[in-house]
Image (tube, rainbow, N blue to C red; front, side):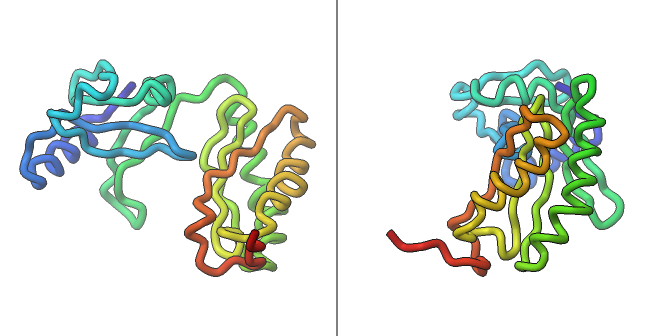
Length: 182
């Protein structure tokens, strides 16, 4: 687990702005890394990760991902904020770039015809974490698109690839196909 001085300083600033009483940050993973503050009285509910600059906590479920995480704070440009990444295993960077190229050049142009888009969040081993947006979020055909379209295409790279959809489809406000009511 790595956290830059810049990120630790920003977290401390946020904790102070919210009145203090915080033990540190909670690092979880739900298709992408999530950061939350941990109150001192709640810290015992989580597993503490060794960090010399800040209290960092996680749950048992996400501990291995949290331990592999690197937290930084970017304060310039349009995408300022916390950036959480993880050290990739050998070969994962090549697979990530191949998958991103397929999503950008083949998959997104196809789903864009229905007002949708698919965002690559992470690749871990052979698990590809994606989030669907636009007309794909809440679409009754989203699972078909993922399994028969996206996953089938990505399995041409490696037959063991599994696509994991992290989309909250219930919050989709303008699906291309409304889900059927049962």
